[in-house]
Image (cartoon, rainbow, N blue to C red; front, side):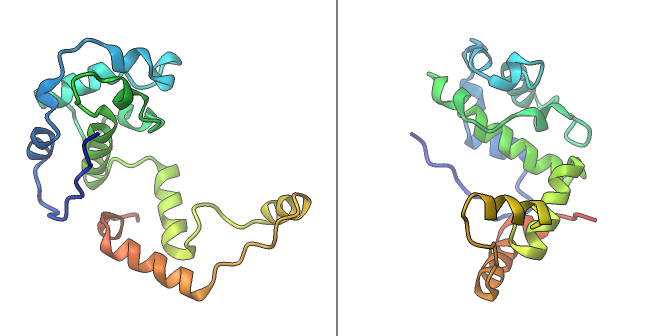
Length: 163
């Protein structure tokens, strides 16, 4: 299995990224689409997305289909040509978010994580459920919060405009 490369250069062109991911290998066989749980229910059409990526015809600023992927990686497991559609979609999502195309629920979750090191609010309901399940109260230590802030700062999440 190919290791995913983490790109540090903020200006790396999407076309260069897709070339490095060898999207050109895709033969449009549709095996990725046939195993996609999202696609089965009217969500992302993986084969079509990879085709549009290869042709450079995705409007990253407006494409909503990219956000329908569940990131289960079934498509990548199925691809016999090593295209890694899940990583292609993740890279397209990253580029789309830089264009301002980021669904509000992802934006809210990112803001929540940046502020609290949690991806969800620690509400009264959460506290009640944890108590019922016999789990300790959820408390984020100062160290964990600082570590999360360091992660945000060192990754592209820190560069993403969320307001």
